[in-house]
Image 1 (cartoon, one colour):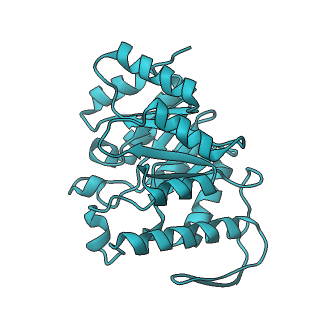
Image 2: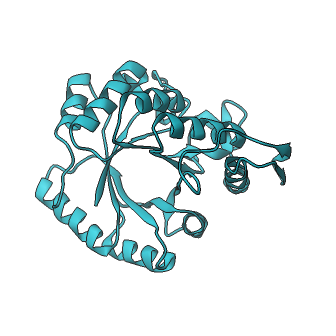
Image 3: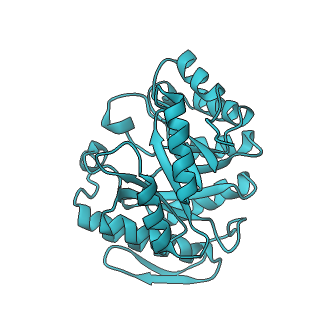
Length: 273
């Protein structure tokens, strides 16, 4: 099991200097990955919010070991060619430590409607799928064209290609066992799915998803909430989903005052081994 720390990008972490400092502390404290949320206004609130991609570039330059990821980038709200370029840049700055996590985004997030972005879930899903095709096509380093319902590209070549080969891993977020996000995750490299109405995916959920993925390499990230008060109960749950086939446990740092957030990061992951 690997252990990822999910950091907010709003509140005190709206200060990018503080956010980068937390990521550095995470590496020093034994976390295996640092994951950033992607909002215009953090969780729809009027609060200081920093851009995750700019922050990821700084974190990549200031760390040496931890993997970096987004959880999740709502690709329908971003130009896929810009995401392709930004992701490749972070991959280079980090020496090949980046994972692109994408999804539809929170359907209730006012950061869509207030800026004239797509609010319909079905159209968001269409743009997400087209966007993923474009991102991967542009990462190839070859001339790429695309004709879709929402996007058009004419013979574009994007360089440099990512450090990782054959490409940057793509993980999919969304509600499990909803058909759309589940099938989308199975088309790519990993899952950041969550169990709707529950704190975490269950071991049975993980086994079911792993069976659907088959024998190929496929990452399953579970968790995404703040640590429970009962650490023994949390550790047993981590052990159970690891035995079921999960490869990552993700712990979220709840926005709070700076001293509290530093303490949560510094205590390190709740390892089972």
